[in-house]
Structures are given as structure tokens and as C-alpha cells.
Image 1 (cartoon, helix red, strand yellow):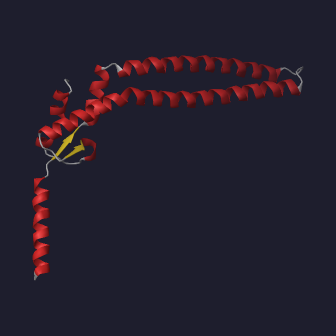
Image 2: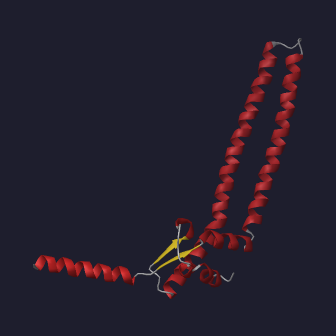
Length: 165
């Protein structure tokens, strides 16, 4: 009997605690997008990306020149097999160099994008936390995770105001 009373009291306290919790949701991606546009993050990223694209174009042009030279050498019956082999190795090595540069450039651009967006995400998070505290929300969930949610619990506009957007 005492055990049952303790269980009922425990259950009722859990239900009371659960009903006291408030949930909200927010569109973090839209806020980050708006802030990154406002802070010229995309322009900074595009500028750096264009430097890499320009270099890749130069490398591609050089590769095409080497490839044409190799094709011409294959048709030249007076060239020794050693010279032809050297040209083929140079072509393959340059191709590998381009591939490595592409991978390195992609990694550097991704890291740069992270560096640019880190303060934006921090600013958004701080604004979400402030709105949640002001409105007494226990949990704030990103909209991407929700399939169905009441519009009344969307605090995106409140966070947008907090961020000055």
C-alpha cells in the first residue's frame, strides 16, 4: 500500500513537472542565412572561392596543353619510347597534382566557411537562448527536426527581432 502511494505520488510529480515545461521551435537556418547575407559572409566566401577557381582554370589550361603535346608526340614516329613515356608520366603527374589541389582547395574553403559562420551561429544561439529565457521556454527545437508543430510555438520572429533583422 505504501509502495503504491509512493509510486502514485512519483507519477503525479512527473506529470506536474512535464506539464510545466514549455517547448518552442525556431528556424536556425533562415536566421543564419539572413545574418550571413547582412554581414557579407557570402561575398567574402565567393571572393576566396574565385581565387581558387582561377588557379584551377590555369591548371586545367596547362593540363590541356600537356595533353595536346602528348597526343602530338604519340603521332610522331621519330620520338623514342623513353621520351613518350616521360611525357605520359608528366601528364599523369600533373593530373594528380590538379586532383590534390582540388581536394586541398575544397577542404580549405570548407574550413574558411566554418570560420566565417562560427560567429554567426554563436550570435544566433545566444539570441535563441535569450528569447527562450525571456519567454520561459524549457526546450527550443530547430524547425528542421519537426514534421508538425503549432505556429504559436515558432519563436523565429522573436529571435529575428533580438538579432536586429
